[in-house]
Length: 279
Length: 355
Image (cartoon, rainbow over all chains, first blue to last red; front, top):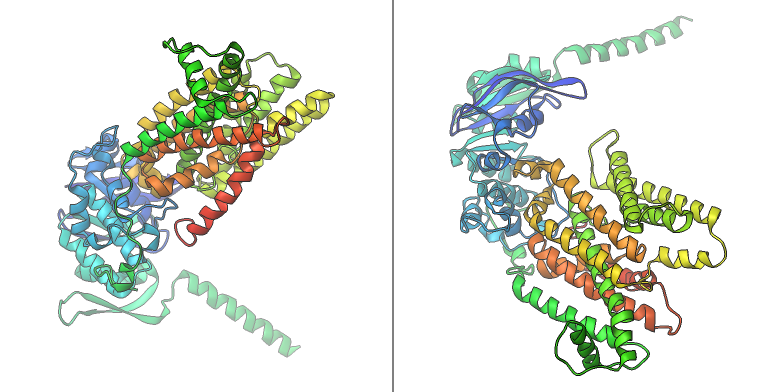
């Protein structure tokens, strides 16, 4: 699916949380959505999913605005895996995955493709979990089942909001490799820059709601950008095997606005001590 | 923690939950149990009626060619007990259905009509009619009260944030208290002598005054609302992981929620109008049934309604026979039975989905 974001912006509580973003994530590949907390990643994903209507600009899928698509039609094309989504309903894994078939079911519940749930479980390598109770799954298993649920929607656009949160390193690696190898147009909000560097074909970097960089991780993830967007200093090395960027952070933050305030406060304290001494 | 690609040994020891019980046989069994329950419940009580006699009496009124029943017995069956038992069945089904829908829409396993202020609002509306003599039909007043309470609960829950399960319950608690205070005020100000006892009985929930009119009100509400809600069953399933997830599955979240909430208010209003506020049926029954049917609403809702009907008929039968000739408000019986059942469910689902 061709996804085009043109000048999309929306306000939450009066603030422009996403502000004039233009982007065209590559088709059939994994795009990383990067940026510090509060940069607008989740809101942009909700705009792309058609759950929010942009106040400015548009999100186009195959040239039609996403929020103009009929809801069912949209749910058959776009799947969203939320950050930390939980349920109090005593569902089995198979039932969770079957939720992804809702856009395909008739009023009385008949599904036009009965094998879809099994295939989605299979594709997400979660068949072994099918009859487990959702509440007994580990974090990594839950995330995998959510992806199976999303795959049951047979989406041509897959959106993931921090899918690697709270997963151990092996689960993080296998999950992102899995999503990358699906060859579906995917956009994943990610916090871990090294994971984004290793798995994404393309990255979009948001800062305060604006898109500040876009492109291949090799080109985008540079020390200057990390300093400007995250306020950290880092060396960017090349991975010995893949040549992808590997980011080594320095211990102290760079001298940007927040740290300057801290310095001032400290010198103020020192000055007070001195004045006491001279008394 | 295991990687997501592997399923390892300890997991295999967990009980498999493969294959929920098929729906059709459960519904058939449920309907049969309900019919038998109605016949037996009508027979129980002073006058020593037999089930066969009850069946013949009902058959006679339905125009079937059956041996006639003595006139007194026929009157007991057709004019006194059957309306009451059928009202109990309809109210039980309605309350259980309301509870199941509320729990899914608010994503709160503790939600029921009682908790979100609906029945308190309906009670206030009804008491206003009973005591003050506001010139409205009782069911209309109860419905208006339920709807106003619902609006108050959800606007309160939404102030300064999104609607979360916890906020819905807290807001419902506040609205319930307010309506209860309003009800007490109305009674304190106006009620005299015997009407106190009458109102108290009604507030605790009682089916003693049931007539064929009650059967018509409660039955119509259950069939009408139940039918519409059942048609929304798939949409209700989509709420399992919250509003955003439901939206991403193609559900119009706001419209679905408000439609269903209004329907539940209508249903609760009708139930309260005929029987007062009967607690615990809406809270407990859906949890008990979900262990049998699983959480798919297409399966859960019809079975919950049947179970609620059977449950309330028996609860009411206990209420009128336990201390015969003295009669208990049925709300006391549902609480006495409901609380232990709830405790058992709570234990069984320890550490599972409710954690």
